Image (cartoon, rainbow over all chains, first blue to last red):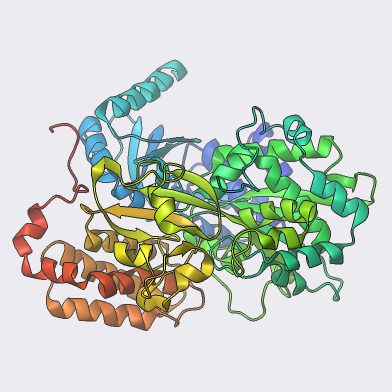
Length: 175
Length: 447
């Protein structure tokens, strides 16, 4: 997937920069490149949920490395988004143990309720639906990850409705 | 009741906090090791315990530790592998989430033995909330003098850093993990050199699974010989098993190694039998990578002996009739589940997770997925089954890291034990598309 060039330069604000420097300080002198993964997580959070080319270039400057070193990492790991995503990413696990406990039903139900297919974002920009591989919640399937949380045992329409309502409520509060 | 060494205090109210953990005997191994033992003596106890790596490979932990190069004088590191991503496995998550200080205590004691002053916990990035739990535990341990500078006044210093990954199964492989920790793609390294000689930043490094490190606490407190008495002769101690699939009581259980598989599945103390009154069809005993076995072979070995939850009993019969304990990811399938469908799912997983370095794996995993998709959706031929067998055979053993083997084994075992089901898919084109094995894409609401 191609990364997005926005034409706008980005950089961390003071508090994010402080966090970034704290992360870099965890690693031995001269090994600041080790901070790459946690710093990219931070950048994704700070810069609207995805990593634009400008964001990656900024991280390269911050870590004193070449931009290509950031690109090759950002394109390797599944948690980094290279395209804009909705306010809430619903990442449904569809690996074996979840599949046999109803992951496909969960995905089909979410597609129905949200009116989108996997990989798409709702027109209101609230939800992006994604399939992901094993999240280590096999005993609590079917499940999905949204932000910092796992939502497990999503085996009924009622529970799925409750989750979507909860997230919509959260978004309404923020606005 | 089976003996519990790791989770014995899991139900104590507030055990997540330092104070409660400490009041219940926590951090005793740090006191004992740092104040009364030499690093070599700690390693000796771990060797005597017979503890084997709990991540999946089962390599003796004490032996791994003894390979660590201490002579070169270069900085040494302990890296804890908390990248738990093997389908079926969710035990380390449980331990870190509910009793985080057990891991921190294990790291301090182990790092002292390895004479390292910096340890990393490489945790999979999706466990975002656990990253916070671990940092909090680290802060608490520091505030109480069990971590940081001059621990317990003994002059020993240790820092622990929690390092989140970003979604890549391959980083569970120890050299892929080290590459990732260096801020690169998680491409496994050629070995030798092994990490014990040239690991993180090309310095001597030990990489151990969360559960292995946690087990060190009990071993140091009670002695390696005591630990070796628990379990079986070749499988010492206890093991966390994460049980899932079509069972009544999915969850994380600590078992004494040597427990009969039948008891584990059907006793109410453990899995509680098959859900919805169904019959059992098959089991993947140690995470998605290990060979799947049909009911008759998981309950009894080919010789008719009861199969036990131990390294040696699960391996009995080799891959012809046996499997592996692996990571302890225990997946049970009921009679409604489709083996072809499940094998296709796993093949897709390995295709998705292949890092792409080695051609047999990069090309082979996708090829297997495509053949399996063809068979599952009713377009397969008998030749496809043979082709599938051929492809998996050509991946196995021909890659830098074990991901290739891990991708090949589920396919090989599914064909070996369930060939009739593959053939049924070939001869019943129509039914393949209409039958419902309980896993078809069917929304809970009408569209």
